[in-house]
Image 1: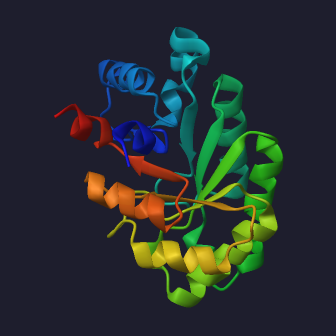
Image 2 (image 1 turned 90 degrees about the horizontal axis):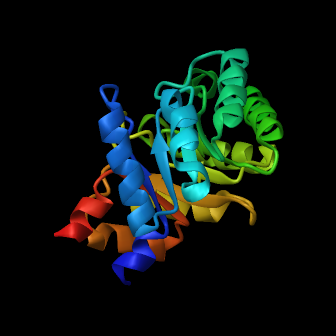
Length: 215
């Protein structure tokens, strides 16, 4: 698999809380030069990126990030603003508290509401696998599918662990045919990226992919 092929599946990511505009510009310029699938950046930068780079970039941002337990109204407002500012993809974090309480229907309803708000724009659902049991992961595959989201995503990169191939294979077994998979968190080598893509991932969230291929 060539670097160009791999990077076409990469969401070039910078979500550090201390990211400066200079840092964000570098991410944007790299994404344009290397033709990544998108940039994934904090929502506070979406509007400025859209103003500066226009349609040169596919802008992805995060909602309810990274802990997920903001109430639904707050996530809805955050989503609406991000879309109005120019985002074309939203990566939302589920309410893991609801999962732990067994309220899977509430999780499903929240995802469905955000997907309705996104319309034709892409909604990815981060379930933060490191905190879930296998039973809960399977339940979230069902929730993401029933809610009509576009992707299920493994991790925020801020939890206790990131993506695993085992989780990707579990997703493949339990998601619906229209749901795609994004792996994120701890994927830092070309070999790892190739393995996730070959396992069935459509996207990879990574902050170091371009730096890797520059060497």
